Length: 187
Image 1 (tube, rainbow, N blue to C red):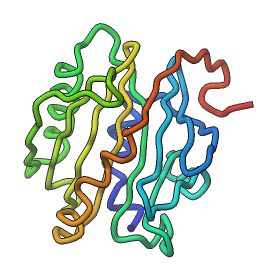
Image 2 (cartoon, helix red, strand yellow; image 1 turned 135 degrees about the vertical axis):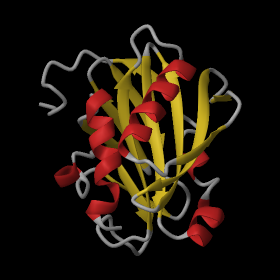
Image 3 (cartoon, one colour; image 1 turned 90 degrees about the horizontal axis):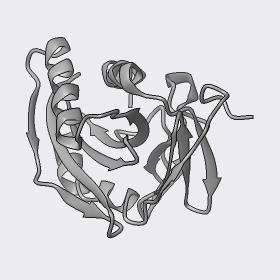
Image 4 (cartoon, helix red, strand yellow; image 1 turned 120 degrees about the horizontal axis):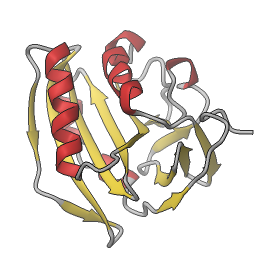
């Protein structure tokens, strides 16, 4: 996927994001930064990569096996934001309002609240319009932090084919409180 195609979203996440490092595990890793860490898993048949997205400010990217971050027509990436005193719904509405200021043709739908790994509330948001991409963002709430898992593609058929693969990323999600004093740069 072209870096420019995700630039606007990355910019938006930088406004509220604190993720900056990943500890890699078998088939996944722990995305951490600021005060939160979240365990994420790559969907079956996808690569979990903590290196290729670094030039874009992303420490947790995924793409189908045989592809690459730079050339894959569909990607998934993760980031962390601080919700502070906002509820999950308030956080999402604020994020979407901010995006609507930047992307005039943005269209989105928000799912009802769900629960991941029996304890972490999340909401899925499907959107179209950011650099002509179809996206599904899972906003997972824990400890006043939000883990955002984003699947993005410009190909509607790929979006429809993989739209549920993004749920595999949070199937075993867990949260840990982190005290990252490196500003997301790790040790």
